[in-house]
Length: 321
Image 1: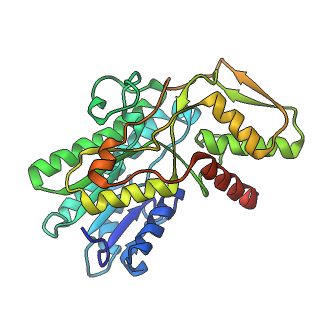
Image 2 (image 1 turned 30 degrees about the vertical axis):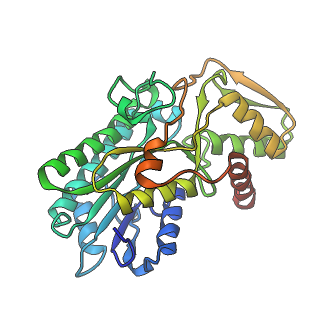
Image 3 (image 1 turned 60 degrees about the vertical axis):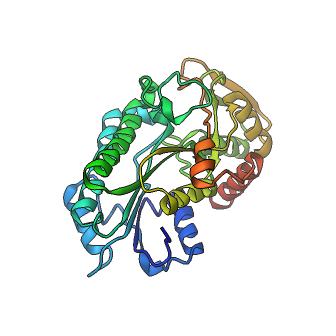
């Protein structure tokens, strides 16, 4: 599919990943008038009526050709433990309504496409490393974020069922942990990199002698820069017609201990690191096999990890209030 000239809805398009996706659409020649980004104050995507109104109002008198569904309610371990019911409902409800009402709105007849962004939280807790897409059903997800992961995986199954019954074209990608400028830096709901960047810089500004980090630091993670993730998502919109799950990752892993030490060095914080082992580590390891993305999408990550961290730290320093 050539995206130029298509009318495209980007849910979550005002978020830090969404802004990269919209920027990528502009680079492909998609007119700003052909991109619609629903805002939460106008459309509650967990409500069927609001989603129906979205499809009616996005392009008055015309229909959307593509939906790129990035919107999610998501957070770190603490937020997932606090609100597991909300995280399941919100993410399941958004996908449920958006996919079904896209079908009801005639997307199949127009040859349109639905692009769903999943999560590696859908993988089983003890998936062999590196994670291969064929392992997705071989066990239960890590408990602290299982409701969120299961909801996202159910959206994949819905698209697969709609492909079988209605011939709906779709794509399904699973980005690894994302980071980058304009990320969520809220200490209660953010993921590990923005939380650590903020913690280090605020401690540095206050002159604190230490920072406290959750867990033991032994768990490992893989991180993907937001611009690289956006390019992978757009490639899936262009070349995929079925929801074959595709990992998007940077093909490396780093322990949380090494990550903290790296961010401490890059931010210039001079204090000590204290580990609170009463807090959970989360899934023991996360690292993706990205061969399918290379084969099917012709995609691989380009931004180096230290470069991406420096760009993210610089953005936070310039924009922190």
